[in-house]
Structure formats: structure tokens, C-alpha cells
Image 1: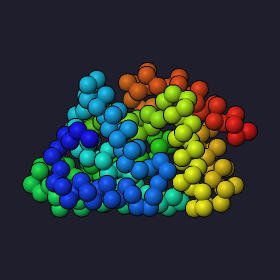
Image 2: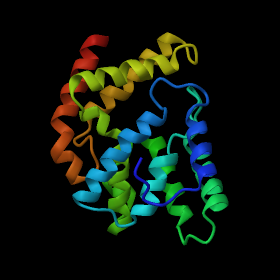
Image 3: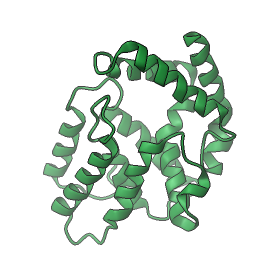
Image 4: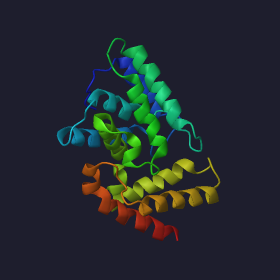
Length: 206
């Protein structure tokens, strides 16, 4: 992992430990590394207005993930703020901005670009959320592995019938949206592939 901000060893170890608890099929540190790759693509492309805050938000956005709970994002944001404050005092980082980015991930599939505000911060929010959702537009094999891993995470946490119902609802909702991705950059690159993947996943479930 290339560190945009040098992290103290204890901070790095605690972060990786968070992603190991509980054991996860998808939302482990490998997912963070995949999102970081998209973060780097954005950095080389349209760029970030506040790259340090966005980078830290990527690191912590799924640090707390207990399938079936509705407060994972809020708890991840709180953990990020506490850990950054503990390990990087006096850094000048906008912790509220980091927390806001993380908290927005609770509303994947329910946000429009207009909901994110204007200016540079609104643009960063759109790009950040799209980095996390880039898996939808991955090649078919990668998307299918993601879809299976999500199902594995929820197995035993919620009844199977409820998971299937909610998953179909989520996928259909994404497909109905005029834009799956909030930023122009991700929309142009991944929207068509994401729609192909979603249609295939829904056919399998029909």
C-alpha cells in the first residue's frame, strides 16, 4: 500500500486488525486495496481536491462491518476520527470531511449528484463513492466473485430469503437509475459494464 500520509506502525496494525474482525468474505483489507487502486486512477485523472482526507476515508470506510447492522458506516466514521486524532495529532486534516465521506457510503444507490453539494468537495464525494462502487463495472469474473462474496458474508447473519429479497431490490434499484455512477468520470468509463453485470446477476436470481 502506497502511503499518501506516513502512518505510524501502531495505526497501520490497528487498521488491518479492524478489517480482520469479524472475518469477511468481501469487506476485508483486500477490498480497501482495490478501492485504493481506483483512488490512484482518480489522482492521475481528474484529481482530488482534498486527497489526504479522501485517502484516509478509503482506508477506514469499512473498518467496522458486521453484516445485518445498520450502523456500520457511522461506527467506521467514528473509528476513523478517533484513530486519526490519536495517531496523527496536529496534522491539519479535516476530520469532519473524512467522516462525512465514510457516512455517505450508507446511502449507496440512493444518492444523486445534487445530494452531494457543489464545488470541489461535492466532486470529491462523488468520486469517492464511485471508487467504492467501481466493482459493479469490473469484468464479469470479478463482479461475480464480488457477488458471491457478499452473499457469503450475509450467510447466517440474516435469513436467506430476506438476503435474496433485499439483494434483488438493491440491484434492480441500481439498474433503474439513469446514472449508476455519480461522477462524469466513472459514468463514462464503467456505466455500460455495470449495467451488463447487474442484468446478468438479476437473470441468475429470476
